[in-house]
Image (cartoon, rainbow, N blue to C red):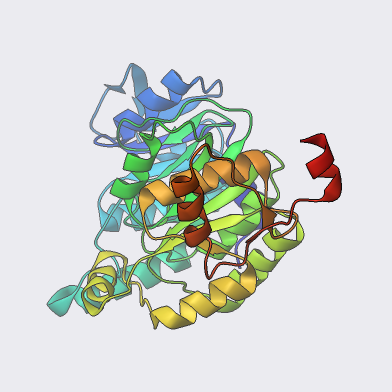
Length: 337
């Protein structure tokens, strides 16, 4: 069972520790560039400094338990590091390391064994990943991320959850004016999964909408509960669900060990939970922007204004088969015209 208080510390940290060098250096640099004001500690047994910060030799050298740890070391070292962080009372960790359940063929057993040992080492301390890029929190200026990105500090915005680090990175580079508050990449979801993150974001009043780019749902019951909570709070969810084709489903299995399931079942699930499903990244970003600014529609009536009969006809065709209608003009509206 994940400790929710520790998860809150991980997602909105006041202190950060980074482990490793490649990737960890960006986490330091980008957090400082974003304006993170809390302490940042670097742990590396063979380096003197990283990005100008003196390196500590081990977890036991940390002056206090960090709220968030970015773990960019190899798979076996990651398990040891997570166990030490859990024992000292850290908030949680993000694991950049790969080599867990996403491994296939002859190495599958090795990867599954590692992932089980990782989960045991974590105990109730939340871990995101393994095999994930990380998390950007543009609200609290914490960037646990191994690369450049396009996020800017915001006071309010949308939370995006994706199982692809590269897609998450590309989405941060958007120029459509979408305020991104959180960017989560989930990797294998060994312990913390999509439902846990949705639920945690719903506790943050600064989140105006949630976007999902997912390959599969590991815990359907928990996902259903989180989505229903979002519906009750009127926080809209927009989703891109990959895996419509057999080829895409096969890629998802090797990418993050996700079982995608029958696509028609996801359509039915999203409809029941009031989740808007889109097919492309531009649709995803624009829909999130619209919902984050205006919220969900209060009714089914919409209006279209155009100076062209041809354009009006195209709009009429576009809403065909959708649960929206052009509302009739009222007598009062006719008189005002």
